[in-house]
Length: 88
Image: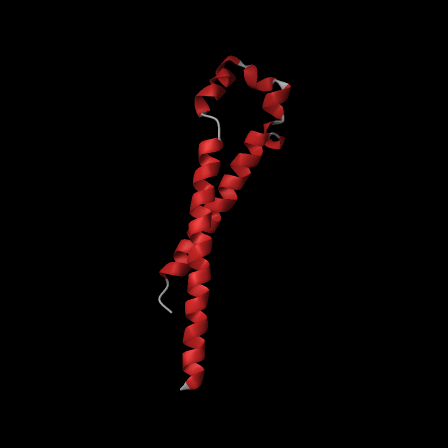
């Protein structure tokens, strides 16, 4: 009986840790999304302005890093949401 209680206690601790990580990920994801530039500023690509140095190296810029961070945090968001939704 004592072994089952210890396992349940460890599961509860793990769930609390994952919930805190989930909340932090939600806050960070919101901040990173709000820091990104609007897509309306990229409308110059229609007129051919995307062939500039800035357009070619956008992945190395701050905006590119924010996009990559958004993708990683969104994936983490969905994984944590699925794990926290499991009933174990």
